Length: 76
Image (cartoon, rainbow, N blue to C red):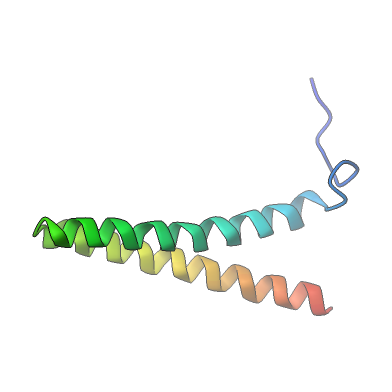
């Protein structure tokens, strides 16, 4: 059984690392979904494109929330 990493290895507490990871993942996902939307549109699949747009909006929302929280924590 391994000991949880709490900043000794990375220099960043788990909760802060997790917030950074979450924010980056949401923003990266929003970018990736743009390609998926374009692919669906090219094939004339509006239903799929709409689903990807909704998912992209949620990813953007998560990214924005993560950025706000990071900003508050880094300035405090």
